[in-house]
Length: 167
Image (tube, rainbow, N blue to C red; front, side, top):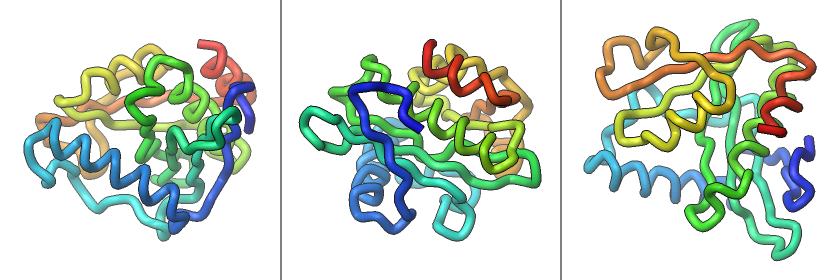
């Protein structure tokens, strides 16, 4: 699961306090960007529907720097949820490493496609997915008909996580 020599990426339960703190930080940032706490279409992810949740730690300091999860959509598809990195680490490869680890876990679990969504107030997120090999797709699931949602998908295989990690 390690894709970055400066990080220690660990799978943790959804209830992990460090993961919960990172998810709260992400939601706080999104609330500010969207100007409202009511910006997520559909039910929020939970321990009931997220098969994998990862936390990335900086090896040098031991501090958590990011997280991400996989929500199961169907027998072949998982959705990237709560992919977040602390602002001071952005641009350093943390998000790409978490994404690569999520793709590897998805493939290991038998999923061949990953999807993601980023909102209109997340141009950095949209660019990130596009630069990570995701293609724009019609809005799916709870995002259908939501004007401020942009959806993406990527087919994964044994090599895709390694390619994401090197991007």
